[in-house]
Length: 270
Image (cartoon, rainbow, N blue to C red; front, side, top):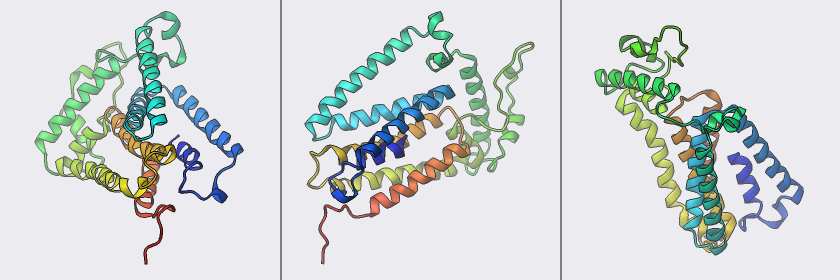
């Protein structure tokens, strides 16, 4: 969704020559792609990713609300209000039979007392104990099974009931890295995102110079700001897999190009 949205918005950017602006048909195509991606995203019923998307959208709208574009401030505040109302209404009716029985109703079932939430707390406790025993370098990459076995929580075993047990992952990106590669590994991992945001704010003047009131460059930067937030928020409750890694690597590669390329509206210096 990020790449489709970025291509959609960048077609209106003042730094893109008119000869390279995308056509109306391609704009419709990007819009259809975003809707299709969102549709299948909802069908996946992955609550961690759903919360991450919500956090990313929230950060994106807040960024627009503090921009210098009057139209963006107005529309972002209106959309943010609508999102808050819809989220509140969805949460309020989540237990109604008509809503709970929907295939997508699982996305609204958010509770710390939920079985899947409890299993996460138990395995996070195991990961924390593993970290305390080997805090600097951890137990080694892909060695969470050793932590799980040594600090096994008997609550996972409930006679006659099925529980969501993951013996090879801590079901959290942060606890995975903390237990497997220790505090040094976790700090190195978070340092990637810290470096991204340092470069993001350093490049503000370069990319918005002379265009701080225009919508397209601001929306582009809002998308860049929001995606790592969505990734990290979802990572708090789920673990990394290849379909998550590949978009992240592509995004980081693109951000390197974005931060180091020169906007077309800037004149060459000789």
